Length: 421
Image (cartoon, rainbow, N blue to C red; front, side, top):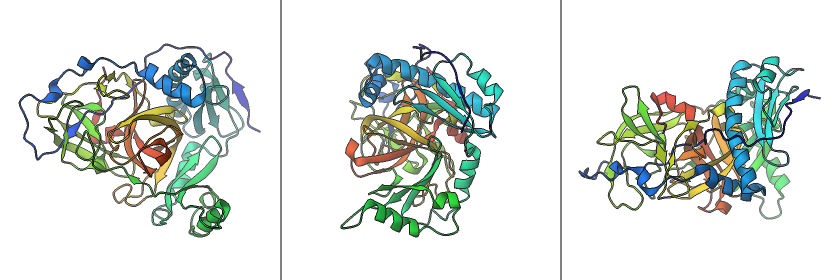
């Protein structure tokens, strides 16, 4: 039995900074000449400012059956929880076993640790914060679980039926995303047993006994044609150490890109600056001819924009309700199911074995499809990440099994930082 410490208090409406992120800033390819009246120079505030917290709260309220007022309070608290988890993990990296935001039933944050007692420093960090539960007695620390996943090497990558593996800290189980469907007379149990029998004996016991979640479609990076950018969706605005400003997209999208604003027929060329596509990163950035960029993004609206006011790093995202904008599927939201996802689909990390650092999202109202890659993941006005890939069969909610993104703090791999409003 784990030892729990409940931090007293009823969840309060904490009107702190509206967390949010950057949404796509359209990009374009090098085959079209730059025009003098670059539409990207237009002030993005001209279309108005979208109340990101209010819009995301409407989506949250529908998904979890609460009032919009309750949804706003929960999402505000969620933003604050992220900072707490980041501080707790930094203080206890060896015993921190993960966290999750619980949305069903009593809303709140649950943080777990290995060992028999809750660390005193962690208790002090959350002292007086409503809705937080600290628990001891976890089986693995997050670092231990991720080490087990990483120890699978490329064994799973070459197994054609496995698209990814992760540790579900909420249920303390390892999970395999595997492609397979119960057809004919075969039940789901029979299909699962058949797939499990094909797993190499060299895999760690924890992975061989992992829960298997079946999807009918293979996963992959989300690149394909569509609107906004030549191959993908633009992400957050950034700057480098020299003060040059530009925009992000996914590293697998190709280095020659153009963008165009909503309502404009003019494509604008961009200049590729740098990318990283490796075990932990899938990101690149581009500059426009005049080096102009705005700390704003499109989310639910193609007219109004949201200002970027902050970010949430990887360690503080588990269980969070997050949304994204993609040129193919538009705006939709889901829930982070793990912050320790290791993609194993074909060439997922451009050669190297992927690390267990990616973010996996699912949900009944989530939409995901090729073309959304590079777009922003966010909640209200705080940046969460950059879209990487998905398992999907169509552009609607019924076609999206799950999506994967890179946590926003990994943009440091290309030596840029977010632009804030």
